[in-house]
Image 1 (cartoon, one colour):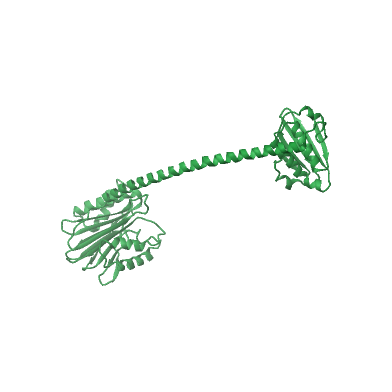
Image 2 (tube, rainbow, N blue to C red):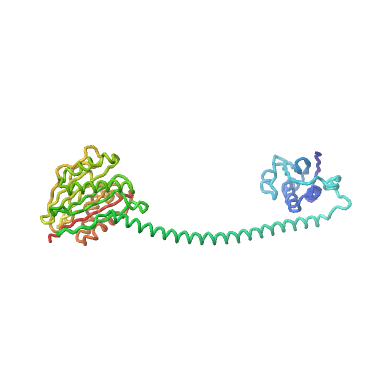
Length: 410
């Protein structure tokens, strides 16, 4: 492996030398053109300053590589970074290229840059290189056009697929929503008729992905004609909390129909459920209303207080004491009693209604304002309208239940 070198004082001479050695090693004309341009640009500053440059090359037959080195006085780093052919190595004063090449032809016995008797015309070689570069550019343009066509076709197919998937997603959401609505309706107790009372309820889950949750209600008429209402808020969200809430409401209904005193039902429910589900935790509010007399009894187990709005506009929260199911020392104290008058509105709810802004005290104040606003509205509109007013800003999404009772006096 012999190293050869040559000194050049002009750009033209340097270009001729590089072109000659590229031809000797049968480099592709397009590669040859990039190498000639790169060497000329790398040596340009030194040659314009009148400094001589050195060209050194060698061929390694074992690896089939041609190494071309350009020695220039000065720093070539900034220039070498933007050359048409990226160099393999750059040091202060030297730029090196390594290219796959063929063994030198017989013409290699004459040094590149010397003018052999039948040396090709430089203009013809430059034209050959230009044609090769143009052909390569045309090939790239054609390939780019082909890829664009394929991309457009692919995009069209993907768009059609997205349209199909979106349509399928709409169908699934519709079917899913129908199933969930049927499930939610199945969990609700049927409407009851009680002379002298109007009742309505609103329920909204924390998210559409979990349309059922731990907020549940139950209402029924007892054998003595009084109306019993149960409000339950079981810990958690989704189907698991729904199961816990259903267990609580079923146990409360059974105990109430068996004639157990109102203040004993919360503690007795905890005793019944504890052997089957030790993880259940739920707040409970129980209400009994005698529509004939307007008498109201409330028992509570760690649940938010009921709100009573009088027909004259006065309002207060009915604080009944007690601890919820799954809590330490569960049970209710002596029921709170109150007498309703015709036109009075009783609102039972879960904490999702008043704690959406993470401040329950502020939420209770806003609840009184919202209830005043809808005090005279038709009963079927009251719970939903109050919930809408309360949820203009939601910082803490949670399942929400609101149940309104109005004494008509009829």
